[in-house]
Length: 245
Image (cartoon, rainbow, N blue to C red; front, side, top):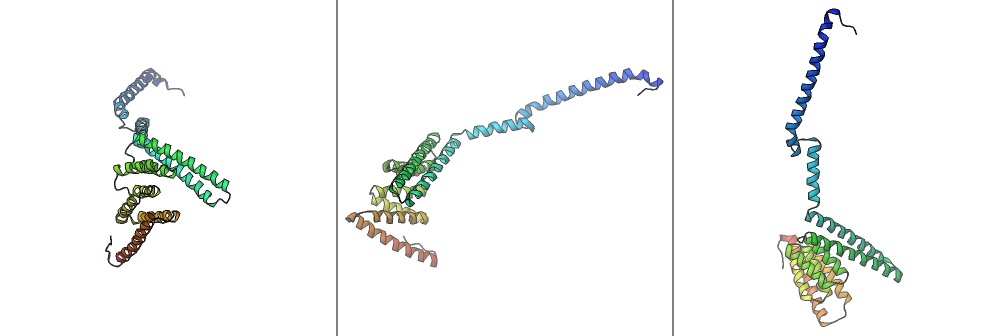
C-alpha cells in the first residue's frame, strides 16, 4: 500500500511512537506480574500457583500419621475379607485336603492382617479400630491372650466401642473365662442389642462344642435364663417402652 505524498513525512514518527508504546506495555505487564507474584505464591491467586500450594497441602495431609494408619488399617481389612472367603470355601469343601489348604490360606491372610493393623498402630497409636481388628486377627489365629490385650487397648482408647466388647467376649469364651463373658453380655445387652445377640449366638456355638461339665452346665443354665429375660424385655419394649435388666 502506497502512502499519499503528503503523509510520508509522518511515517518515521509513527513507527517510533508505536515501538515506544510496545515497550511501555511490556514494562507495565512486568510491573503487574511482580506486584501479583507474592499473592499468587501465597495461594491467593488462581492458576498454577494456587494449584501447587493445594497439591503440597494435600500431600502433607496424606502423609500424616493418621492418614498412614488409615491406609494400613484398610489394607488389614482387605486381608480379613480374603480370609473370610477362604473360610467360607473351606466350610463347603468336601475333600479334607482341600479344606485344610483353604484354611491355611485363610490363616496366611489373617497373618497379613495382623501385620497391617500392627503397622497402623505404629503410625497412629490411638487408632482404636486398628487395635480392635488386630485383636480379631490374633484371635482367629489362636493367639487369644494377645487378642484380649489388643481389645483392651481399643477400649482404653474408646470405652464406648462395643464391637471390641463383643470380640473380646468371644476370646474369653475360647479361654474359658465365663464370668467375663457374662459381664460382657450384660454390657452389650444394655447398650447394643444387635451385638448382644451376636454374642448370644457365639455362646450357643461354644456350648455345643463343649463336653458336659459342671461349669458348662451352670453357664448353659445362665444362658437360658438370659434368653428368657431377653424375650420378656423385647415384649415389654414393644408394649410400653420399658426395659427389663
